[in-house]
Image (tube, rainbow, N blue to C red):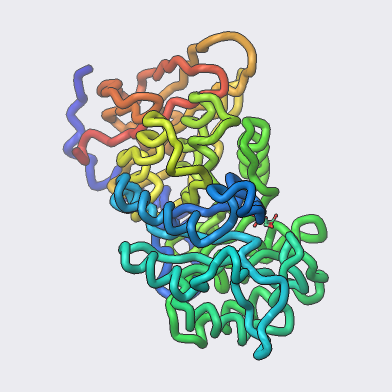
Length: 422
Ligand code: GLA
């Protein structure tokens, strides 16, 4: 396609784009000031895949033990995960001994973590990775291990002494009166230790059943925050996470930005429940949502296809884009959802999901003028498809229509670059 000459009004258009981006929400909201999570955190978290398996006799390879984390650490380095950006290796619930020690400190289960967390942290650090740990704001963790209520300072200091780099702080067994106070208190306690510890909260998720959480405040205390129910290894779960996010986008999207992110929960790519197309959808949409990427899978047994998807550098580049703005659902019509996300250098990411769970691949057309708040392709743009396979789609003009074929429950992920910027 031929480009129209557009040199004379270039300045005006840049100004227009700038205004569009400013008016469409730059987070003016202060983030937690710990200098961390300037792009969404990436790593591995044991929960969805390994849950609370305590039986190391019967299942030594999948129980929650230091061996599991050491094996994952080895693979994160040898199999290219670390180089792709997945640097935080995170322990979820069920690592603790059932009781605190005589000084009131949490302790790891001595059978399953014979070297303790400090030694595991040393091992993880020796590989150039970071270690995450889990605790709970209430009286018990969701699986019934000791909670941090009444012990916030001691626990923060224990984690710092162990040289932990991230805390996932859950919200079970806590009354509403204390939940907000506890989440704030722990944030300050972590800061007081002087160690850089990413603070991953579930604060809004536990509040939503009662009232609308105060996201201005949450962003001031947390590096990321879960809003919605736990993900599981199924399309229904991924889809309901997307549905919740789009229905609530006006309330949450503008609060994401460098230092603080909405967390739609773990990536379950590489497990059992999602078809290939559904895995593509999860990867594409988690990038559109500027989500932290915590894989929960078994890196010892993962297909080359799932690995390539999770390590796709073009998709990871979108997720980590320095503009740091979360995308949103632009429209839903005829069982196709179109999502878009503004990127740096005036580029946009666009995802089209075919949500119909019957039939085969379907074609969908959209005027390019309706993408990127009318400026993504003005006057022309280069469109590259990143998923399900990478290919050049071509140069389009503002008046053109874009037609894509999308598999059922699959997604086409595109990168749109305004041609004058290339
Ligand atoms: C809650 C959290 C999950 C996981 C479990 C552990 O359900 O939302 O992500 O941490 O607790 O018990």
